[in-house]
Length: 291
Image (tube, rainbow, N blue to C red; front, side, top):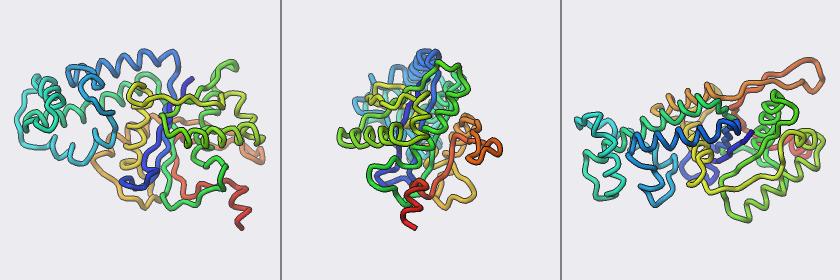
């Protein structure tokens, strides 16, 4: 089993909340998933996106507000013309005309819908945390609660599989210093805590780091993080939302992991939902130490 992880909003620039998103992909479905997404790229844009664009394709560019405004412009375009015009828009860049830009915007929005449908058909499950930007942070060197929750849900998903199955963790490439910090924090959790050691029986604690523009799983995790950050809301969340992204968020909501774990006092089982909201990133020990 593979867990592809990406984050959005951690720079506190444009997003209303931080999101840590993971997509769980069965390894026997991975290649078929990749082929289906690549086939969709050709269907919607006439070629692979990596061939048409020299820059990395990111969700914040694909799903920006102007994209939806552009798609709604009253420009009549025959559906059969859309892929060709979208490809021309990518080739021409800033010199693209209105018909090409409108076609590209319409194809992008339809493409994202199709990609999420492909992920659902290939048994992809979502594990993610939306985090209040003002959340208290743990002590330096301690793994944040959103990561702990991510690995907890991944562990219990793996527990539903045969005993020999293990879970690998794949991150989007980040600055080397940040990678070192994260690896150290994961090691402290998986080697230095009783719960972490127990969960390392199913989750391999040493992650892989890959280029997002070359890895379909990370591209999908990037889409997931951005969509949830703007489009997924619980009643208790005060962050503003973009209503145009709600249909995409609803699709991801339906794909979230659903499971259970034993209660701490062993009184029964507690339901686990793949997507959660956090307003405090500290663990119990950090909170008790502060008090």
